[in-house]
Image (tube, rainbow, N blue to C red; front, side, top):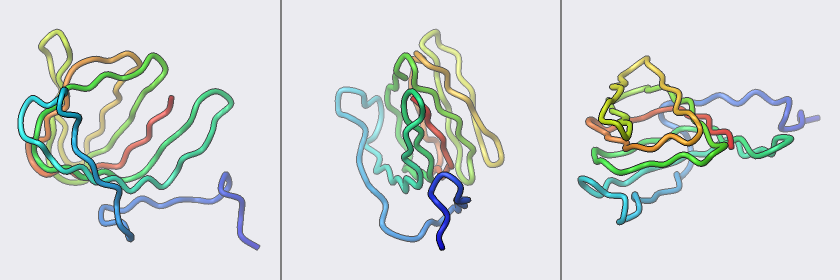
Length: 125
């Protein structure tokens, strides 16, 4: 008998099976390029308050503005490539293979993919 989703282990790999959802940054948020973003979302579960999303994301080089909602947060780990997350005050964190980054609720800034990026992510909101 299969285990319920909430007790099943879910492995994330750099090259997931199946077709990803694809999109581009919204035109009003673009700073540079118009990268194709591919998402293999493997978890979409409700929490007592909010939801959790988890999966693998890949993106071509580009740069766009981001804004986290008041309860939205993300933790990601880079599997390949390199990116920078810029904050609104002009600072940034550069993240490469084997490194992760936590983006807190209410964060405003931009996301820059410097080399085609593959990351695992978990977003809670």
